[in-house]
Image (cartoon, rainbow, N blue to C red):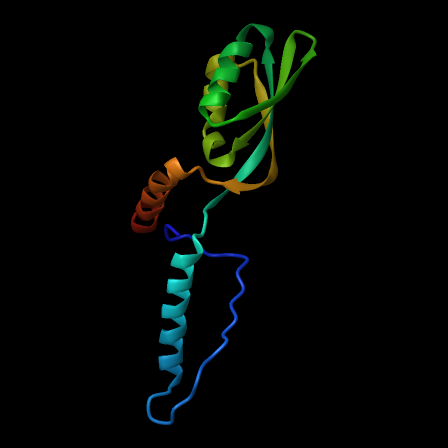
Length: 145
């Protein structure tokens, strides 16, 4: 799917035959590849993305701005807690949306905010983003770093 590796898959071959003239190791490899490709198309695979638990410490006066920013990053706010003149915002956010978060947070909080991320698990990439993710991945595969 979109050129990404497939994980956690199990394949069982139920039928096959060997013929002395047409059977070779290469023929079986080609048949297996074609069969797996067809099975993947019929299985409706899904693309998963890593989700992170974000804990963002921010001054009281920028809470709305930061929550709006997290929402724009496909974040789901889980709660808030006061700590002195700061608020601790907890959210679940895709890792892809947090890769360049530090400069944004610094800008929104005038350098007074901080955050930490911890891995939470994987979730399906929303259908409306699959095309964009596939295109970005293809560009990465073609362009040298």
